[in-house]
Every structure is written in C-alpha cells, then in structure tokens.
Image (cartoon, rainbow, N blue to C red; front, top):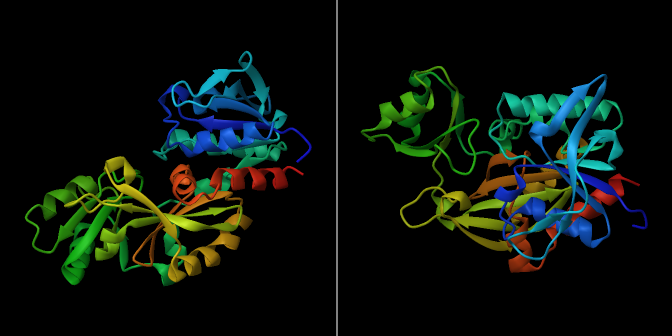
Length: 318
C-alpha cells in the first residue's frame, strides 16, 4: 500500500503487555514494518464531548526486544477517533459495564465516520460464550440456565459436564462436574451466585486431551493453522493462562468446515478478528473481544497472521 495509515490501538496498559506472546503487539509491529503510524490508547482515555468521541493517544515506535517493546514517538495528543484511518479495539475482557460503555462510545465514533474493528455493535451483540447458540449444528450438548433444578437435571442426564460463567476468560472459574461429584451443589451455588446468575453447561469432551483448538478468522479469511492448547496432566482446561501448552497444527476437515461456514457471516458483521474455540470437532466459543494465538502460530508454522490483519486493514482503508 502506497499510503501511510494512521492506526490507533485501544489496549490494556502498555507496560503490562508481554511482547513475546501478545497478538496486539504483533499486529502493531507488522503495521510499523510497513511504514504505518501506530498510536496507543487505553479505554479510560476515551471521552465524549460536544458531539465527538476523542481520546488521549500516544504515538509509539515498536522496538525489537521484549522489554522495553516500545518507545514514545512523540507527545501524547488528544485526537478525535475520526483522525485515524482505523481504530482497533483490543482490550481484554472482562466484558463488564465499562466495556459495554466503550462499545457505545465507539459506535458514536463510527457514526461520525471512524472505522473501528472489531465493530463495537458486533462485539456487544456476540457474547463469547452465547454466540455459539446461533450455530447449534456445530455444538456439543449445552445448556444456559441459572436455576439449579435445570442445571442438575442436565448433569444427571449427561453424567459428566463442564460448567463456566458467561463472562469469564482465560479458563477462569471453569469446572468439570460429574454426576457423583460431592462438591456439585457448592459449585453450582458459587457459579450461579445462589441462582441469580446464568451460566453455561456443556457436555464434557474427552478430546480436550488433544487440545482446545483456537481457529482464527481474519477479515473473512480462515487461517489454515490452529493453536491446540493442550492441558497439563490432570487438568481439564487447555487455556495458556492456566498452563496449557500451545501446539500449532493444520486445521482438520471438521475445523475447516466450521470456520468456512462462519467466516463470511462474521466478517459481514464487521468482525475483523475472530477466534473460534473448537474441541473434538465441536464449537465451544466465538471470541471477538481480543483474540490471541497469532504469535505462536507464526513462530511454529511460519504463517504471518498479524501481517494478514494488516492486509485486511489496508484493504478496508482504501
């Protein structure tokens, strides 16, 4: 692309990011390598005033090392989001009211002409746990409920299930519960907050031993490799945040079938970066807030996922 883009990334605090594995940093490095300007800002810097959404943004230079991985390229400035060619929303969950508020502000910015990815309306409309219910043909047996009667009936029927909150991330508060589990009631009470909070229950998939596969879709294009997050011995969660081991591998036929079906639908909704979670050929989550695993796939298979993101951004900005 001949034109230099001015790209803003909404991130968690910069000094807390781990450059050796962070997908957002990989994208910023890919953008800077092509001569694009990279600006960083935090959610707390977003402000609406007198009809415009503005933010305190810092231009940064990307360094090669892990610490430090960036340096300021100029003073922090207050700019309207429409001053950027594209704005990338890359803040991690929890998807709380502050996150929802950010999507409203970003939606206002879009109405004023800003390009924002992922589309804030689509982020808000796609619960990372519940979005899979739109595609039941790819799911394992699942239940969303908060009443212990319903959840216990599901456990009794299937005998071995996974329970998880609808707003968790990184494997937090995920429990495997068997029919004869002596802690069953207290787990339900804790997760549902005594029946006041809905949770998801899914049939336990023993194929988790082969990995919880992260399948990335970038601008409607399916990345041909997944990252299998393989649990430690004795663990039922493959998440890297809880010690899972990441192994990049070619997509299976079933994973390709799922991703090919979802890709055009999700891209049409403005979801530039999507991370599907697939276990044993079953879709378990659709991640849209800040999907990761780009660095591991690039390192192990040589496929430049971050570069593909910038390709799609450049196309969107022409």
